[in-house]
Length: 269
Length: 269
Image 1 (cartoon, chains in turn green, orange):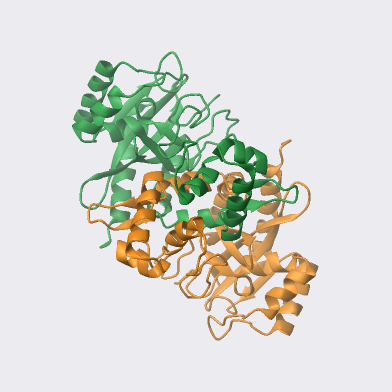
Image 2 (tube, rainbow over the protein chains, first blue to last red):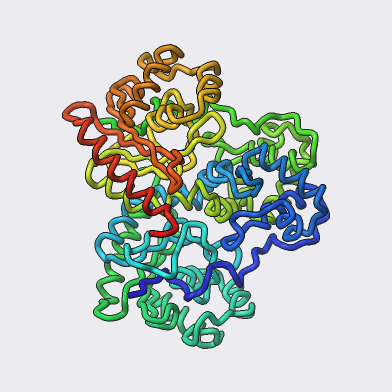
């Protein structure tokens, strides 16, 4: 049994370079940000020379900036002298209106979804041309593929991403469909024409359902979440094993949870 | 009914200035960090001039740094031109070994604690001379006091903080006890001698129990969480209404959950 997130079977962000990353930075603030960019899901703990190399900085510059980031709390230094991301960033990220604040409003309903469906549940928002998970609850099974808070994925290959793309402005949709669409497994749809049809169908039904096409053995169902003004602000998805899954029931439960999240986001609840 | 976090009835961090904050920053990277410092629980959404004022920067400098931080994803700009914290920081903070990674290992057990006790549950780590919540689940009741992921609190006034202080090295304990100990309500203990006795008792029993002394109508029970090497790495607490509460039972359930989290943190599970 390999329940998955609503994503392909690959490590997140491995193939997704963040829009802000890159080695050549003209400004001092940019060089400090490039130190932070050196960290990633496969690079959680780095030595000073690894930071310098990954950030494209000289060792003295990396040393000075790293010390400054440690003092501020963005990085932590362990007893072996290696660096990792610090809690000041968790504290700051909790202030993101589309991050932990949204998670806070959604949490009980996302938890209910997980309890009812026994599947993996994801809450995601659009950021640039990707989706970022602001909540992710995994089924308690041995699970080689993990979905985690903070994971960033391309839109065309995830349930939440397809929903958020379906409700995006047409110019943005076309920009995404014209960008390189990575194939994560043999079933990943990367043909713009086929994706356009999928998006139209999602807008008609209000639900994205994908069997196998996204994660091989699994079924993902995803729906939009509206803010109190009626705009699509996020998407939630459930991933369950395809065998025995009932997509219509899952869609109904998801729509119920989506409405509850919208109410929780409303200031006049 | 006013179930609270394991903290006093006051807004978090209002009285806690972060070690890295301050207006006079000599370096360019420091000025960029001071832009991020301008944001806080009561300042989630700021105009450019508010950022400049709070960061102690000129308007042109604030404008340049803010634009750079927006491009990188640390900040977002809404349609009204106001700024808030962006998702790139959530993505980065998910890499913090003592942040969302710890939360990930602890999550099912913290959720169980919440289901069994129906109380507020907090998972916290020490950062500087404070504790930071890396997980917080609130009871679903009207709750004027909130505990949120990323909240930062002084150690002497929280259940998790007292546990983490009790298991800290003696020099650190004395440094905390010599620092200004804020009184959040009439029951907050701020006398170093009394706190020393409390810490000794926590080390003897392995549990912190506080009734009223921390949050007025509530009972908080907190225990340490060990890492696989046997070091105290975090603390978990449950807050319930004092009436009808059974501290011994809560302590037993917490110790059980704590051991399960240690196992989940172990690489060879």
